[in-house]
Length: 259
Image 1 (tube, helix red, strand yellow):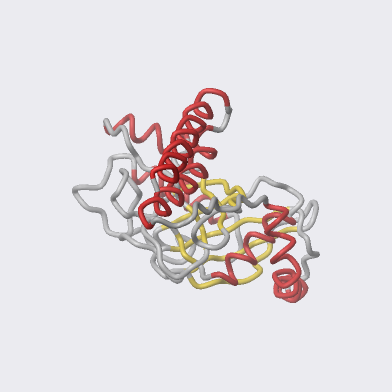
Image 2 (cartoon, one colour):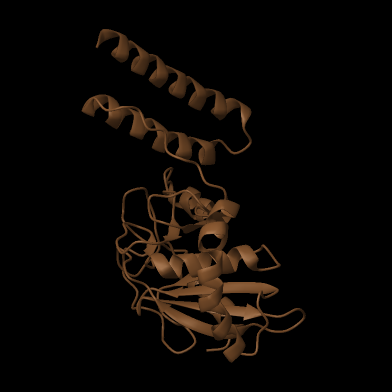
């Protein structure tokens, strides 16, 4: 037993040391550390339960496409054909409307304007209308973001927002806030705290569509309401001073897309 505990202790020390080294030697420390956090959590759980150490598998985007690509493309292709957009598209855009819990998918062929493809229901998104301001406020952000593939998450498949983006950091600095939060995803599963839960099949469709799209710049607009048809939410004395300007930017971005 003592020998086993020593081995496990050494393994944990190696993992922690590796995490610290990654901080200094990788250009993407936060992404690497997120994955190591999951690995360390698995090891610690095994030690506490006196079970064999099981190191979780780290998947690439290509691994997930090999598993879910065919089924997702079979669901996506009829939607694109119905709107007259070739699949895979040249460009892809997504819009989340918080007040109606909807995610709208838009796409375009080369040298053409974006067309509306379909709407997916958002199954869970915590918080209320209004921007995300700090770590732990359980708010879904509002603004103009870009998405990247996140093949490793406890919530099936995911797309990661670049939150906080430069605008979010500028607003935080203006307000004197130092921790605006992080790790915001559009993911699978049916529960979420601060993220956007779409259910597993839809998360597969969004992941595969994002992977297949030619232009890897993947914009996401998150808006409190659909400014194309609805007025801005009533203002509150506690609203940040920069909120009307942010809503004006979101409204202008939405105006470029068909309803």
